[in-house]
Image (cartoon, rainbow, N blue to C red; front, side, top):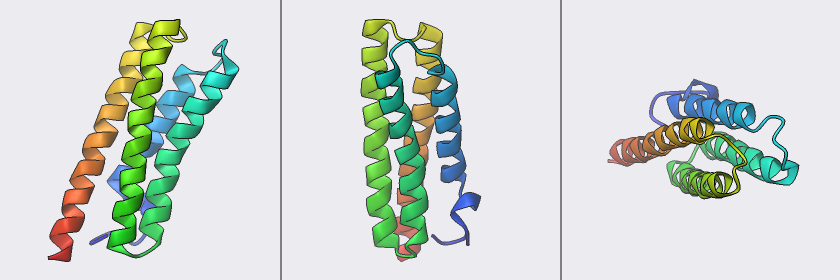
Length: 120
């Protein structure tokens, strides 16, 4: 909120875009289309929540949307557990998405902290 004029310039939005790319790459051609669709939509929700929240122009609203995005990351991690159990994805693919999701969650936390600092 403090520095960028466009959500596309935010580091966190770029991280979310990387998460979407990784999820789409890992789940392309997955035999369980319904599961793949759900996890892809959840990854897109992370990206969209960041864009929508930032575009509001309100730090409080942006924080709320960041919490929603973080919740979506937790959903993705939950889906990865199911993907592992059902063998929908290789262990390597699960690890790649998991690392990307972890980086996304760390970025959300850092952004929330920066918003708090900007409000002071």
